[in-house]
Structure formats: structure tokens, C-alpha cells
Length: 608
Image (cartoon, rainbow, N blue to C red; front, side):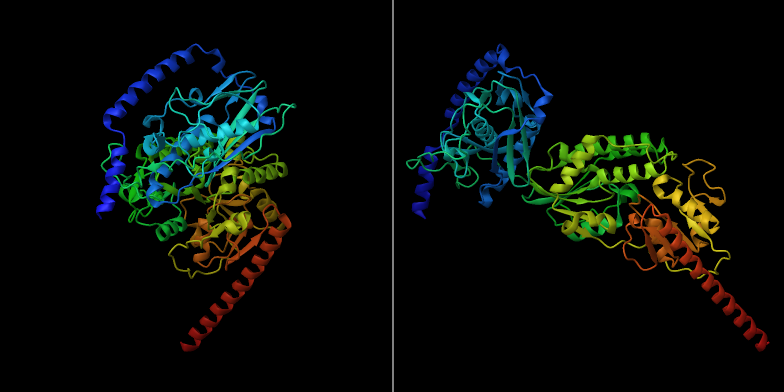
């Protein structure tokens, strides 16, 4: 024990004092002022953007692991480093430098402050890995320097680290330390170039696009190992055992390795899933607590989470604005997307950097992906609709088949939004949904949940004659109304239609039109939903639970469910065949009911 105490005392004697730290701070401030003055009058740091570099080939690339230290004591600062990289990558990604202009790490990134989203990460200073706001950005500067060497750029300024962190590019002398703002990384090229940076769940990737010099060859990925045998590896404040050093900080209150569930409108299937999967150290981010506010649409189970975050006023604003618009149309879709973006931003602000896994509702996914929130984390997706690219392709196909439709071509999302969602879905670990048809798009990554049936009993009612076939609206092209109208005309079937007439008041030449508030389900003999797009078939589940037969397209996502007949969407012959089968079955039931009534009457008369 005495030997241990002597060892700790010896290490403490090597640590810098507060006086030494103050002297360092004064020197650094003077150098920062000097560099600021120089940068102000340096026109070479202006960076004109040239969109043509987006299509140029990759001429330099560097990849490095995010989680390079397996020591549990280092996890909090490693998570802080990854958070700092998330923030920095958003500033670096897409930067385009003109011919002969100089890329500067600090001029591009700006100062690392808490206000900008930076947290405590690991910074190498005077032989120690210390907690520092913005710490860990050297991994990005290392990668930029490595990629610039491979692209054969002219290095204007670069500084090597004083010590080598095991596993870093410093071991191969391809590192570049940075310290605001006078220890910088700068490089340039005779031709314009573009920098792209991203975080996967495990790696930092930096790419450079541009034109390669023809007179030189690619510099090898690895170089001669730096000989640091005389040096000891840097010590870390997180694991050196000295807790009374003035540089030491208290560990994060949020448990490292926790999961955050970022949800929106309640689906009962997802509520059950979240309740079964969540751990006591996890956090829940939702629009508002529906149980407290008596809003069933947001009544997610909140018990058992370490932290619950809400966006109350934003959610109330969304509800107020959405009520002013109709249930369909481009204006409503654009409004909802704007609020999805704002909710995604609020969720990202609530996240702790200790969160390493996310479960994200699909509506917020493209915005979180674009903003880099998912980088450095694994994530699952709660899939609530078809992927945007496929959804819009389905609508385009239907619109081509029915060009007179008022609704099939009324709105399409911006291309960047569909692209961001596609990329995020490709990187997701698992796709979670009860929708059988949507699950088939993701093969082995899909987790198919059982649909939650309403708690109602089958009804015992007399069979209508003729059959009462109900289409549970609204009358919109995406609901397959054109095919249903044609099928009904072929079979001479009179329909009951529920909901708004969005395709025009004269769309149904011979149908009974009912409001949504009517009790039509109690009188239905058949429910028909030949939709091109249907994400939540709640009405169909109610019908099946009541024992009412259902004809539904594959797009309704019921799968091989008892009580439902599936038909391909947009397939008129298949729909007609299914309706004929349903009519025949209804006729048999009618005869059976008539025979049973006759028998009951005869028995009653005999008894009398």
C-alpha cells in the first residue's frame, strides 16, 4: 500500500500546477490574438464555393475508429469526443475550396464553445489526456491531414503531437494537432477541391474530391512508424487514479451507453415495444406527456425512464396550425414537415452525448440524419409509412394510371429529404414495424410486430340483403377509389362510402354517402380497402375484430391475417374476383340465416 501511495505522489508531482496553467493560458491568449490579426488580413483564407466539385472523383480518403479505447473509465470522455466530432463534421462536410486558396481548420470550424454544442472530450496537453471543451477534434484534423497527403496537396501548416496516443495516426507520423486558433492545419491545391466528412456508428470518414496531379503518385496509406520508445504513453485524467487534480472533472450524470427513444404520435404496437425494451438508464423524448395532458395521441408509457423530455409548446403549436388546414393536400404536408424538422431539432438538443443508441420514429429520421445527430451512434427506426422514395414512386405510378385525379399528384417532398431518409434507412440497425408489406423492404433487418387489435367483441347481427359493402374513405386516389368504382360498376354493387369526397362531389355515381361520425361499422357486411397507400389500417382491424370480412390491398400491411382477403393494389381484375367471392359467401350466409329463421318460426308454431 505504501508503494502505491508513493507512486501516486510521484505522479502528482509531475502534474502542472494552477500557476503553470495560468502562464500557459496567458501565452496562448497572446498567440491567439496574433493569429486572429493575421487571419483578418489574409485574403487567401477566403473560400469561394464551386458546386462543380461535387462530381469530381475522390482523390484522398481517411478512415479511423471512433471508439479506440476500451477502458470503461474512458467511455465518458470518448463519448464527449464523438459528440464534438458530430458538431465539427457538420461544419466541415461540403466545404469547397477554390484553386490556390487555403483551407484552414479553425477558419472553417470556428471556436469550440458550449453554446455551439461542444462538450468535454479528451485533449492531449503536456503529455496528459485532459477533459476539455471541444476535446478530441484532433482525430478530425488527423484525418484531414492524412487525406490531404493522399491527395498530394500542398501542406501550408501542420504540427505533430508532442506524444503519441496508441491507435492514432500519430503512430504513422500522419497526425496534425490543433489548438484554437494559433496551432492550425492548413493546406491548398492548384485546383479546386471539396471536403466531405461523415460519422458512421463506428468510424470517422473524411474524403477529398478534386483533380489529382499527374506528375506525382499517391502517397502510401501507411508510413514509417514513429519511434517513441523512450516516451511513455499519455496518461488520462479519466483513468490515472488522481482525482484531486484541478483538471479533473466530475463524471457525467447520464449513464454511458444508454438508449434514447425519440417518438412522435403514439402507435400502440410501438408503445408495447418500447415498454418491453427500455432500461432504467434510458431516456424518452416525446412531443408531450399525453397521459398528463389527456392527449391519447401522445400517451406513451413514461414510467421507468431515467429522463423524459417534452416539447410542449411546439406540439401545441403544431396542433393549432394543423387544425386550420384540411386533412389532405400539399399545404398540410408542408406544414407537418416543418414541424417534424423543429421537433427533430428539439430532440437533438435534449440528447446527452452519453446516448450511444437511438430508437427514432420515421418522421424525424431525415432531419436527424441531415444534422449529423445519428453519427457515431447505432439506431433503429420505428417505421410508420413507406420510405419516401417508394411512396412517391407508388403515387407517380397511380397518377399515370389516373391522370384526372385531384389528389395523386398534389404533393412531392424535396429531393434532399427523400435522399436523407434513404441514406438513414440504409444505415439503420433494425427497422421496426407492424406493417407486413413495408417490412418486406428490409429483409433480415425488419422486426415485425403484431398488430394491436381493439378490445371489442364480434357482433351478432342479421345479414343485410343486398350486401352492405362499405368503403371507409376518404375518397382519395391513393385509397384505390378508381379501381373500386370500376369494380362496383362491373358487378352492379351499390357501395356505402364514408368520409370526405376529395376527388369531387360527383365521383360516386351510385353510392350511399355517410359521415365519418356515423355508426356504419355496426351495419357493414363487408369492408373494402384497395389502397395504394395505407400505413395504419385501424378501421380494418376494428372490422376484423368484430367478425366483419375485409378485402384489403397488400399495401394495407395486414399480411396473412384471418378474416382478410389480400389483393394487389391497382389490380382491377383481382379486386373484381375478390368481390365476386365475397358476394357469393354473403349469399350463402343469407340463405343460411333465412333457413334458420324459418326453422325457428316452425318450431315456435309447433310449440304453440
